[in-house]
Amino acid sequence: MKVIIVGAGIYGLSAALRLAEQGHKVEVIDRGAIPHPQSSSFDYHRLIRHAYGDQQGYANLIPAAFGAWDRLWTNLGVSHYIQTGCLALGSVSSGWIQQSIHSLDQMDIACQVLDHGQVAESFPWLKMGTDEKALFTKAGGILSARKILESISIQLASLGVGLRSHTEIESIDFKRSIVWGTEKNNYQGDFILCALGAGHTRFFPGEIIPIRQVYSLIDDAPQFATIENGCPMILDISDVGGFYFVPGSSAFPLKIGDHLSRLQGNPYGPETINESDRNHIQTISDTRLSPDWAQPSRYGICYYSCTPDNTIQFESEVNYAKMYGGSGHGFKFGALFGELIADVITGQRKPADVSRIISGNSPV
View 1 (spheres, rainbow, N blue to C red):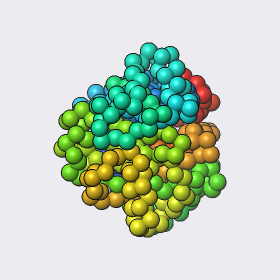
View 2 (cartoon, rainbow, N blue to C red; view 1 turned 90 degrees about the horizontal axis):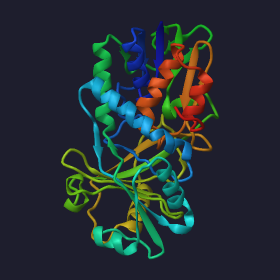
View 3 (cartoon, helix red, strand yellow; view 1 turned 135 degrees about the vertical axis):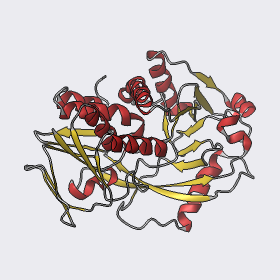
């Protein structure tokens, strides 16, 4: 079977690897480099955690996701995962902490609830209200996204997969399984997989909303806020928050981002950081970080593809499939969902079953 994959993010590359290992011919097409620095998947880090609030379905998939990553590390001969633990801050009244505790108990994942005083003792540089609590899980950490994509790309090339970078697509003929390129670079196969990330809306209008997310990076992170010093990832899940914090290290910068704002963006437009962006991130940082915090070294933008309910969707027909939505929490499932998608393409799993898994409505 020959499979054409449009989009070289984590889903497209993971599915390509599974298919190539099974002996199928695969070509991966992307409008940018492979991997693409402006894709939703490309970054120093993406997070994986067990605490998921009321999203029990996705929480239940995390153990299977870890299993898929372990299989990938074995395949690549190197692990790109760093365990940091996860500290989530929020008001008790929000319910997120209690829902997460219930979910963690069901999965037999150890957790610890900390009050204001305990957090202040361990993390004196964090601001936390006296009416708030924190949930800490030792499990969870950082997926080094850029290294993962680069390693998979190298592995795909060694397996003879065609990596067609900087290829603009004019249209897709799903009935005849043809991808038409703007420079007369046309690709035909037996099956087409569309894993376009925020660019999904170009070919499937209205199914996702491209969301523009701004973040700041600190190259020279304070020592107490580094992985080497035991600093965990931190999530602010309060109703007025939206802060997420990735500790720095000798290998990559500290990152502070906004995961609640839902500002529509254009993934095909110019990426510019304005003063409003910088002020917005600074305001978010100020809600949780004590004064005299290190100043950002630089800022960045990424685009997420979000469905109205923030679920991830998979649909498959006779000779094509599409994967979309869920950006912001989708990368952690990249290895697992890539395997599942490939199994649908090769007839080893039923599309409806995989669709329910990917949307968080069924166990693996």
